[in-house]
Length: 280
Image (cartoon, rainbow, N blue to C red; front, side, top):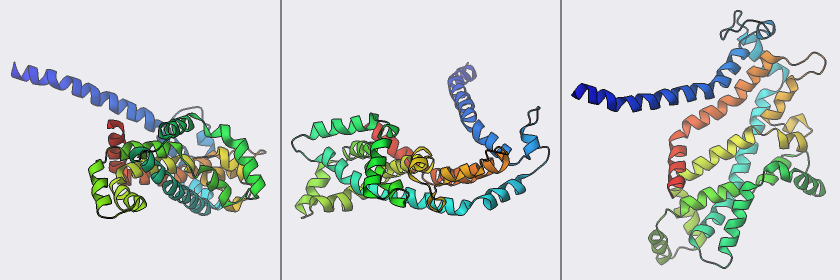
């Protein structure tokens, strides 16, 4: 009876793991198929029969063509610079705003927080025309600034950090004030180091969103020298001969790989930050 009871207790756990495994495989299937296509020749990609492993290995040719046909390393460097600059500016703006909404008392605080929530609901595509006109008037279209300036303020970042800041005890801040620290010193010397999990979580959201963004760079950028990775993929498109799917998929794998490595490196802090924010 004891064995039957222990087995019956393990059945729900086995079912949960089975469901998670199936869900994870379903989520990974597009990436697995992308890697498979990046290893196949053109005729193998359009073959009538379905097979995951290529019958003729062309991975070296496809990945070589991905670097030769387009300055892939330059696109990756542009992506790293743009995403890092956006995230740094967002932190400089979002951290003081989130601190004020979480720990300070002032008139209109609830109204400002409601405006932040409304800002989260507005899709970024709805602001494309105002952003384009603003950048045109400032004369900074087709520059790195045109890729950075529209995203300096993140409503989601303010909301996420504000929720995390609320979990920090007020006694810690009172003790810092008694030691003579000002509000900005409290932000950068106390709140920021204690908020590493939330900042890591926000950083992943920010970097992934802007690394994969094609909509706005396609509007703001015309020069290949400042193209981001997602925009650089379009160089594999040929209106006359069609798309070179093998090099295209190889370029996609190259672009996705840094994101996967960054997430794996910050996975623990990302989960801790999201769990702490959700619990609050």
